[in-house]
Amino acid sequence: MPDLLLEAVNPVLPSRDVKQSIQFYCEKLGFKLSFQDADDPRYAAVTRDRVEIHLRWHDASSWDRVERPNIRIAVCDVEHLYSVFQPLGIFASDTTLRDTAFGTREFGFFDPDGNLLTFYSDLGQ
Image (cartoon, rainbow, N blue to C red):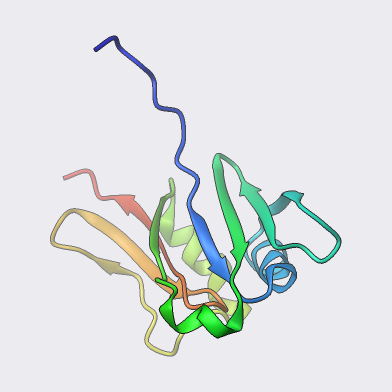
């Protein structure tokens, strides 16, 4: 197999209200809108630095059957990002910055649609 460079992974997260999800990611987490498919979007993408997340609408009647992903986002300074996000009211009461047995420092929280976002930095061990 020839050497091929894989450049990016763009997760597609389920959303009950794509417009509301865009607002959360842009206003709370500092992403920017890359595109949306209509004024009342059913599909959109938001970008921050080199991370692009796609948001796809799912009907309420099928919502209970929709899997909620857990995405992990590597960052250079997880402590700083934690301190930026902490006062925004987006964490659960038990959200903490923690070290893992597999060599990362991380924190995670759920977006309004129940998708788990985990931000981490390698501890360099």
